[in-house]
Length: 346
Image (cartoon, rainbow, N blue to C red; front, side):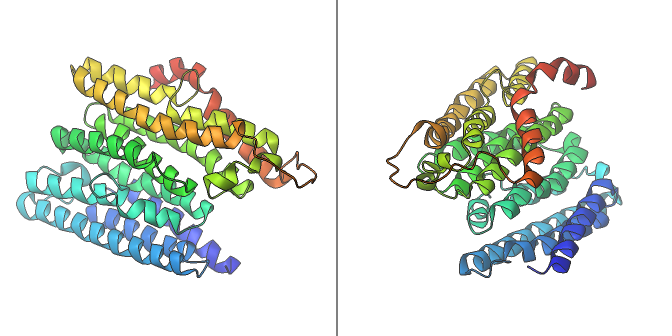
């Protein structure tokens, strides 16, 4: 891809996200989301492969539909209340339409069908942007409107997302699809606590990004797209594949790793809200996700397939990416001791 075009796309992504996050007016928020959509399309389709073109087309159609629904929601609210302010979304129909629009943009069940397909059609670096950075503006809009949203609807969407994210990821062999269903499952955890504690949703999203970034970067470094190639990738950079197991277990939410922290806080908050059955259901559904994380970890580190090719092991990664990946790996594994500080700030 042309460096100038890549720079323009990335700059536009930053600009679109900033406009949406900092705006108070619905039209400005919608404009930022549209800039984001148009900026990511060249990055999705840069390989000129038919699958990449298909992914870009699917992404564009879905995001355009969601943006139109969001605009319709804000116009309906303005028609009935005279308010264009994001925090003044009070009309019930507008709230329902907004929840649907943001669910489509994020990929919450039952509007999730596009996300695994688009992630499968892109490179790992573009997939990383789709799974983390591009989810931030819609989540910000959900946080700003959280007092007006329907808690029952969000709880149903959250439990369905956690269930399907774990269930559909069980028989996948492509790492990008597995990470897509992992993202859907984590979005369920964020959505279930949104109305009761919006700050906790934001903390969960930040920690999810911290855990997902090093996994995508590691898979990109060892050039792994399938489980079959992952089982032979240990010979490339053994220390990196060894830490990949810890990162995957952290994403699964096992203590004493970083991923345990948001799930612990969410279950604690749900119990305080007298939603113990909901907390029990979502905790049990996360066991489905644990299975495919364990399968990924097993393929990455424990299996030792026959390897008749003698070649030198690459014990060190590229120096330019080594510090970046190392920093994120450390954060994705060892943040749990900082939980008292998070309690005091939230």
